Image 1: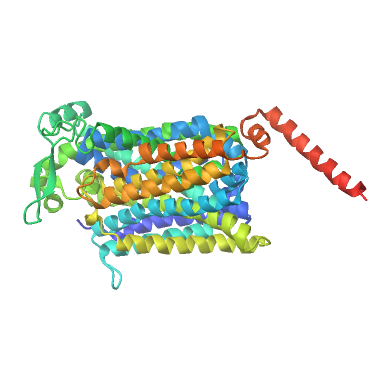
Image 2: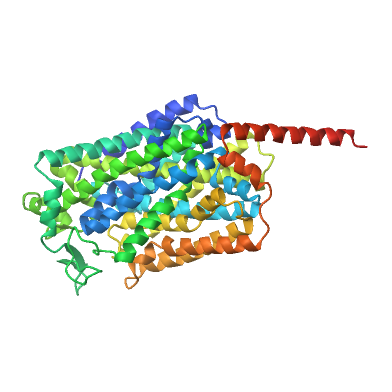
Length: 563
C-alpha cells in the first residue's frame, strides 16, 4: 500500500503552518499568551480545540480498530472516551478555572497551600504526558510505515515516522504557543470530523446497514489472529472470556470479562479528569461559566465523533473480508480476510472507497490527530516546566523572555524523550489482551492519570477537609499501584486484561489513603476563602475580593503606624 508520503505530511504541515503563522503574528509574546492564550478563548473555539487535543491516534485509529477486532468490547473504548467529559462538565471545569492558576500543579499547590504538592504533581504530570505521547509516536510510525515511503539513515520506516512527526510538531508549538495551537487544533478537529463523515456517507451509500450488519456478524463466531505453533499468525475463533464459548461480535467477553468491562470504562471516565493537556485547556477560558459551557459542548462533539468511529469499525469488519479477492493490496494486509494490524481498519476503508486519494485523505487524518494531540501534550509540559519548575524554583526573578525560553526548551526536551521511547518500544512485545495497541497504550495513560491527579483534583475541589499530606500520599500510592499493574498487564501474556485498566482499584485505593491521611493531619489554611472563589456566586466572589483587599490594606497601614 503506497501513496505519496510527501503529499500526506505536506498537507497536514501546510495547514498547521498557516494557522501558526497567523497566531504568531497576533501573539503578544507574553508567558500567559504562550501557555494559556491570554485566557481569552471563546466557548466554541476552545471546545473544538479540546476535541482536537483529546481525539488522538487512539481515537481516530484506535477506536475503530478496537471495534473491528473485539466488537462490543471495543465499543467500551468509545463509551469511556466520550463519557469522560461528563464529570468534568459537572464537577471540575468551572471551579478549576475560577481559581485562576496556570497549570494543574499550580492549581493543586494553591488549593493545598503546599509546595511539596506542587513538586509531586509536577513529576506525575510529566510522566502522564510521556505515557500519552508514547502511543502517538506509535501511531505516527505505523502511518508512515503504511505509506511505504523512504526512511532516514539508520532508521526503519516506522522510526522515521516517529522522528519526522515529532520534529514538525515540536517546531510548531515552539513558534505558535497556546494561541496558535488552539486555532490549529480546532481546525484539525473539523478536518477529522469531515473525514469520518465522508467515510460514513460512503459506506452507507454503498448499502451498508449498521443494525443488519451487526446481526449478521454476530450470527457466526468472531474470527481473530493468533500465533500458531511456528509463530506465524493464523486465523482462529475468538473465545469469550466470560462464557468460555466462541465469542460473538455483539456479545461482551471478547477481550474483557464482566469486571474488566467496568474497569475499562471507569479508567477512561475518571482518567480524563487527570489528563494535564486536557484540563489545562479549561484554564484558557475567560471565566468559570465559559469553562463549564465548553465542557458541555465537548461532550456533544466527541459523542458524535465516537459514534461514527464505532460505525466505521463495524463496517471494516463487515466489508474487508469480501473485498480481499478483488484487491491485492488488501490481501497483503490480511490473513484469510482478517487485518494483521487492526489500526489499518479506517485506512483500508479509505482506499476501498476512495482509491489512492482516499488512502491519502484518511492517512492525513491520522497524522493530523497525532500532531494535534502531541501539540497539546507538549504545551502542557511547557506550562508545567516553565511555571512550576523554572519560575518557582530555578529562577524566581525570571524575565518574560527567560520564562518563555524555559517553556520552549521544555518542549524540545520532552519531544526528544518521547521520540526515543517510541523508537525503543516494539509494539509486537505488547500482550494480545488489548484489542488495539494504540488504544491500549493511551488507556494506560488514562489509568495513571485517574489514579493520581484525578483524585486530588476532584476531592480538593469538593472536600474542604482534604490536606496536603493526604494529597501527596494519594498521588504516590496511586502512581505506584497503577504503574506496576499496567506494566504487568501490557507486557505479560499471562496477565489479566484488567491490569491495564487499574483505576477502579488503584484510584479507589488512592482516595481511601487521601481520606485517612487527611483525617489524621491538620486541615489546609484559608480553605473558606478558596471555597468562595471556586464555588461562590459572582457576588460572593466580589465580596471576598473586596474583603481581601481591605484586610491587606489594613495590615499595610498597621505596619506603617507601628513604631
